[in-house]
Length: 365
Image 1 (tube, rainbow, N blue to C red):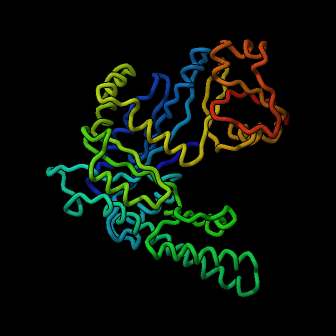
Image 2 (image 1 turned 90 degrees about the vertical axis):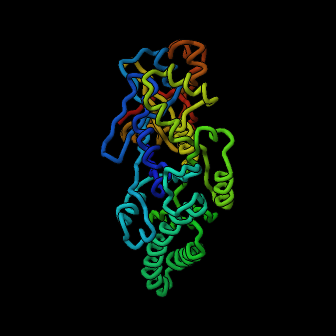
Image 3 (image 1 turned 135 degrees about the vertical axis):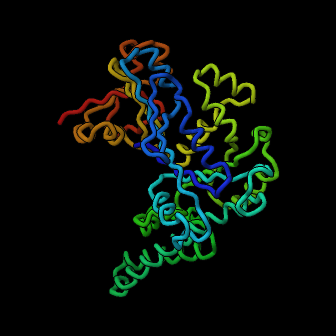
């Protein structure tokens, strides 16, 4: 269940610089893998100190973190929704991602020309939003036409879907994003199959100069104001700092570098945490002598469904789950130690998996 994030932004906002920095970012430990599966796609391991804790306790043959996929989506020009420039490719790529990372330029530099001639974060956001909204309008209008014919026959579901879709269309025509709607799951079913671009979670990344990484600046304030009515996250990142971090080989070097800037974590780490939160994702672990591994699931999943991400047989034949909390694992040093003092819980089909659980599934097929 690897998370897929699409990085978008106008030309010269620092989008590609940020992508390159993230893609070259060294893993948290030497045995954590990284690969580039296409020129514009990077698969990065998710930093998680809990894996290091389990590795030290279990001493496994290998450690497998969960991963996050960053896609550097082709540059966007005005008119992309109508196929201008690389518009069709841009919009096709963005439809496939789980969340959108929208990089917005929030720095002045006379040597780097802005596509609009001046720095205007609200303008940058509006250009991309407009193109996404136009493509969504096409999708919604087409579905309304199809369902309207069915609704005329008296089909209750079709009538309900058309009503919801008309509400979505009104929002889009008002140049607002679908994610601003407070729809129920039942209402969302009316357009779930359309994978609407403006319904996807978005993280705005204000790309700032190094000096503004803590407090921001007037450009960041303008961006915050432009998204105040939207259910979206905003973080400050300096692409130049991330590029320097990517050049460092050792964890200790990176920690020292971050300390110099008064930072507790890298932009990559911040992005991943916010992305997980925006998609309501959590991580559980399996730990054995062969491997220690992280698994990504949706918060609220019960044990059988969580087991299914390992193998469908685990879900079909689920019997029980043995669960240990990491603080207990640290305190009692081993699975057996936890078991002896009653710190290994035996959970059934109704157990809701919690973030950080160390789990062993019993099943029979």
